[in-house]
Structures are given as structure tokens and as C-alpha cells.
Amino acid sequence: MQHSFKTEYPAPLLLLMRELQCLPGIGPRSAERIALWLLQSRHADPLRLARSLHDAKQLLKDCSLCGFFTTEDLCQICSHPGRKENPLCVVETPHDVIAIERTRVFQGSYHILGGKLSPLDGIGPEQLRITPLLERLKSAPPPELILALSADVEGEATTHYLTRLLAKTGILVSRIAHGLPAGGGLEYADEITLSKALAGRQAQGGS
Ligand SMILES: [Zn+2]
Image (cartoon, rainbow, N blue to C red; front, side):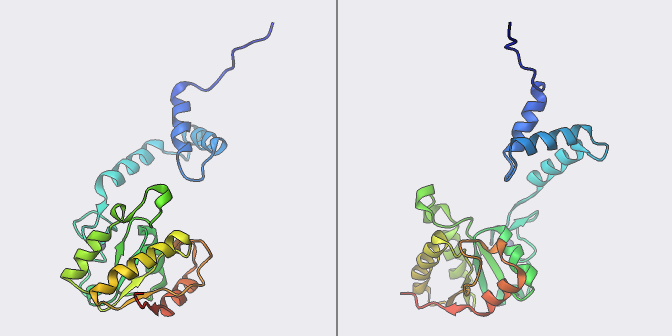
């Protein structure tokens, strides 16, 4: 007679593995390995990890101006006195802000869209922080606005959409030069490539 019963891990461990599998790039095997390590290794401190996740989620909010992470109303960049006199750089994600900051060549401020136009995923202009951008430009127009979006189809579509929209504002609009990894976001570019892309930015005609 064959056994139909198959021994599995107890439910709390299976639940932990399922949660870990929701993380980007973690498949079932990695989730199993991480879960077992967290529970068994003397180097692991799962409660400290849980606390730091909880604290990060509780303490961090979006900057009311640019959308970057902050624990205050305004982030470190928006509350810096010199930065608002300089160009405003429009990016997709907080990760892009850090990628540009690491180049140390940009001394302006940012506006995070929260993604790019992607009709197939149901992301239209209303899903992005475009209205707050227009309000911001009206109340404090920057000397230049730099569009630094991905070089893929959705990034291009978003750049064109914003170029047309911003033509009416009279603000000088430029876009970063290409040479960024094809189809990739800013976070995949190394610092030198990104510095060159910023330095080689081109003014947009607004057509
Ligand atoms: Zn900010």
C-alpha cells in the first residue's frame, strides 16, 4: 500500500516562506533557504528584522513636494536651501533620485512621478504625480526642467506626453541624452553613464 501522506513543514514556516516568495527575485527555493536560515542561524535576528521593517513602514512617508522618502513633511533635498534655485529633474522612482545623487553632478531638486505611462497596466496620467508637478511649476517655476525617464517604450511615451504638456508653461524643458542601457531604467546605469546622460541633455521643442 502506498502512503498518500507527504510530510511538509508546519504551517507558520510555510507562511513565512510564502511571504518571502513575494519579494522581488525570490523563488520558492530561495524562500525556503532564507526562512530556514532566519530560524536556525545564530547570526540571524528575525525579530530585529521584523522590527526594522515595521519601523520603516511606520516612520517613512512621501515628501509632500517631490515624493521622495522622508520622515518629515519635506525630504532632505527639498528642504535644502540652494537646490530649488537649480533645475528640476523629473524621474520615475525614488531609486532614480539616489542613482542621480550618486553621480554628484546634479545640484537641483526632483519630482518623482511614481512610474511611467503604461496603458496596458492601467497606468494613465491620473495614476502618476503629474497634477502635483503642474501645481509645483506654477507656484515656483524652475530655471529648467529635465526629463530623466527610462529609455523603453513607456518611458519614451511619458517623455513625449510631458513635453507636450509642459510646452504651455514656457519653462525650458530638456531630456537626458540616451546611451543609457536599452530598455532599462536609470537605476541600471552606472554613475559615469548617468553623468554623461545628464550633461548631454537636449532641449525639447515641445512638438
Ligand atoms: Zn522632497
